[in-house]
Image (tube, rainbow, N blue to C red; front, top):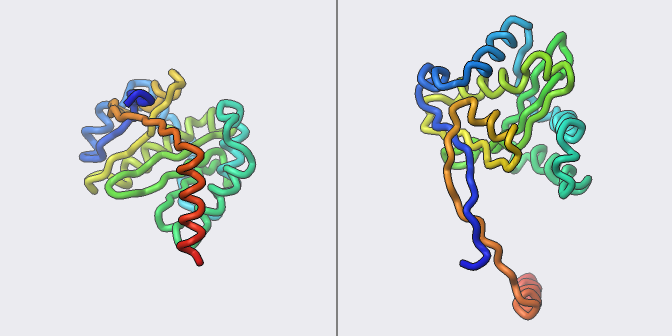
Length: 195
């Protein structure tokens, strides 16, 4: 394909937890130990999706200018929709009963997709993201699952995922240009089917 390009996904096979933890980088292992001593806790609470999305927007929104209010609102509605809510896991990290970080995962067939995650300043200080990712890894080990961090073209983010032992998994991205005629024909076909 002319409009294809090779992209990289970062994945971690969730087999034996002890083997996975042995492959953590020294800094991640140290940060998790540090977090354990700071009395933070991880809870699942889909009702906090608005708060977690806001944390993400505050921390990383400027890195994703293509995501607007409508995109974030659609994601929130999808997570809270009873038809789809079972596919999502939303973790909040608390310190002194205040949310300091949040992470959102989508569970598909044998895959747990890391959709977004972000700390506030207190969460950064307590290494809340590292602690929560370790938590989700423990929770899903030995279930024939893959934690899919997705890819990242941001070197620091890619390095963070790799620090958990995530490995490259290549895939092709294909851009297909649809002609105006085909788009118009599809629109008419859909309208015809509905009538």
